[in-house]
Image (cartoon, rainbow, N blue to C red; front, side):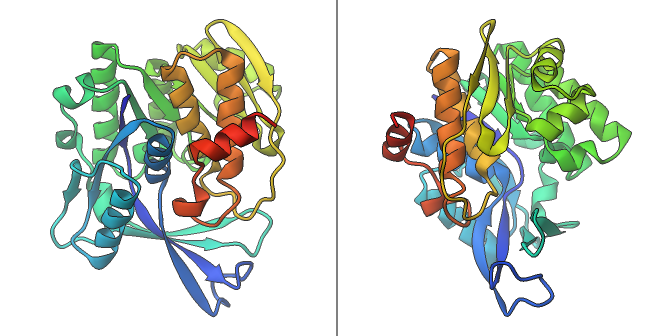
Length: 308
């Protein structure tokens, strides 16, 4: 199972003490991050092969990201180096109930992802193509790269999975139109509850799912954080409750969920099994800080959680 992943990878910094505001933290801990990085690494952990298409710089943080991805077995042949650029940085502010993100990426290498990074052979050789909604927002060239990948996937009959992003939905009308355009071309869409409500304008999860299916996707998952998810797949709607775990840091849970759902989709599992499996990946991702290493689900941990 060969999965093409498009998007921006970054270096993330968490304050110490963990609950400190950025202005008062004594120091920060560094982690490899970004939704595409998490998605690609979870695919590898769960038995797939991921190829990450992204732009990085020639700075030390870009070298750090390359090594972190290689350590997880993620294919990096499609990482393009932009000379004289550095990779984007994001700082987490955990001083409020919901994490706030402060990005330093306006001229970062990741924003230079462009249509030349995507070609017909790459997409036709894939079993599935994925990108998050943030990739549509970081730059016009990155948006064009995603649209090219979506069109090529559609032409080749390769399923496209799109994970929307709430920051995108609160952005410009043009951004919203672009997201809806790719959702109409997607086979799988995995919004959280807030994203699904923003996309459909309805307040009830079952109605959200039905409205999203009407746009064209074959499979829709509406995630409910620790309450689980609703999944529509092959004409069936199922609800799968969440798994009870201790939450250490929630960033990346939605990306892990989407990757596990993608693997279940490709393995042609029934809807209930896919939903339970994806919930397990999302739950395991919140048990540690960061996106790689201990913050990633393993097949053994997934099996143990799914059989509880």
